[in-house]
Length: 222
Image 1: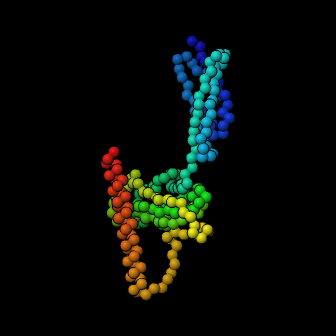
Image 2: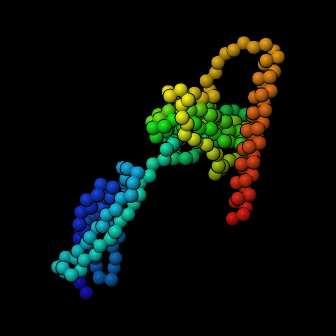
Image 3: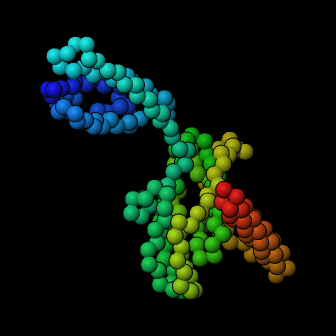
């Protein structure tokens, strides 16, 4: 038995990158690993067949088909702590003291979207909680955590609902629930407004509790 020297031909598709040396010598009764990286720049399927030859043996040829698909998420999180992709890491928090984290929600598509946080945890709040994000733009979100007792949350699922919207006026209007407007009302009007807000909040919490219960039921059935 003698060592075999194998050579891979260059990759001509930009999405695939051969990270290992193109030529390597493999000792008898051993093996060699090669690393290929897929880094798409477009949301589409990419294919390439790479071929290899064994030096001094023209009859020893191999072909390997590589397939990768690039996709793009319409809405992503950016600038999260500790370079996380989809985690909020608050770390240690003092009881009865609020701790906040700021990050961005970015819309990567041309159409505007409406977002709404669906957190059923009383200790966790988002500002803004609901709002609109224009096409190819972003919005800064502040997450607040505050607890009146010792509590530990780990791998807690928090959902953010996102839907595409069509502006009724033909133009996009920036809006979220952190934008306030001062208006003077009579005491009777104020009571009606506050009652309506309480009913909406109660309905929202009931929907979140039902959603959480459905998720727990789904996990139990698996």
